[in-house]
Length: 473
Image (cartoon, rainbow, N blue to C red; front, side, top):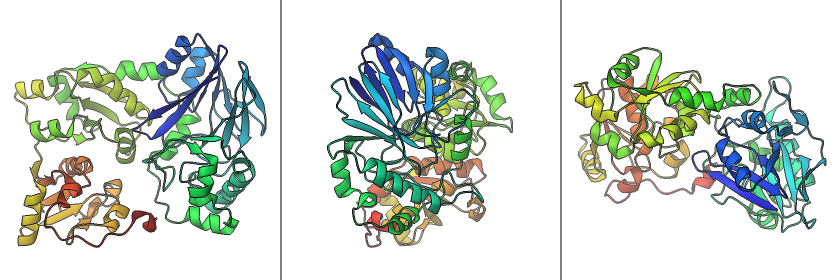
């Protein structure tokens, strides 16, 4: 039996391809179908099942399109319902796959339909369990995303999660490999490891939520404390995952339309169109951008920041790319979090835009050493750290206030557009994103600190005492 973990770094997401004797199954597929079709074709296998561990909130999954192309059966656990045809597996139900099988374990808690899948090979051995968002490496799924007003609370869900872990997962052999749906960087947990798999036995020793002497009440308090509000796009993605959406092929066809600079300019000036600059930090900072554009670089955590910052999931979007060879990838990554209304890209890039004599916006920048000098001399009007609150509280430059990028829209009323802001993050990605949104909202004097907090640590700038971030959760 072949079992492959398919890791997508931008979303910190893991899908799984399982194949035995010409039959294949996919667990938690992403929106795009081609990778799974290619894998099955290479193995001369037919995709028989598409298993979902739950209705995902942080990405739009590809079960409907994949089923349309393969005839595979879409399988969820109990309590799931959708616009399209699904099969609700029962707790303990077995699904034959070639000479092996996959067994559904109903593990509610993260959501009520949440399920895990035991993978049994041709020898009758069960070396793997795909735990979805029930159990992560170093963490467990947050229990607040499926809260329903007046029906079920996060304490209720946390209690179900405790029971699922104790009665379904922790009773499995210690040498079984745990394959989760997410790793570090995902907002579906609060303290995930960067490791993408581990033995259950090691997790029992190291995962705070699997402590043997932990009571149910202690568990509930532990997993519900310190939860930050989920990104605003999560409910939209859940809704889309229960619905029949525009096909990924249609999204790609529309979104990869080349737009000449004149057409791009006309569209960029329409109030209902957003320009997103996806280029590298260096290209964006050195070459400037289309006036009013937001910077969300494709080489950072692109999809989660798109979802967190662009309020309307139906927003009309046109974009700028460094390389036309990456246009298909960019549209795909917009679509992974449900932003399907991409209308095209700037053909010829920023060079052709400039060749037409069109204006560009430039964001100023200074080195970390210059920032430290200006801060010491009192020459800096509004120094701002745009990292997460937990990062800021862990350690920051004395005299610099915190304005997390995550909540930039909710807190923008605090910004005085007449002031000069000096922005930094950890290494320079988020500060450019924030600077672009500041400028698009009327702040004309914005300066980025190159290298961010990483470089500031190498200067004489005064720092607060370090506090371990895990103690702030």
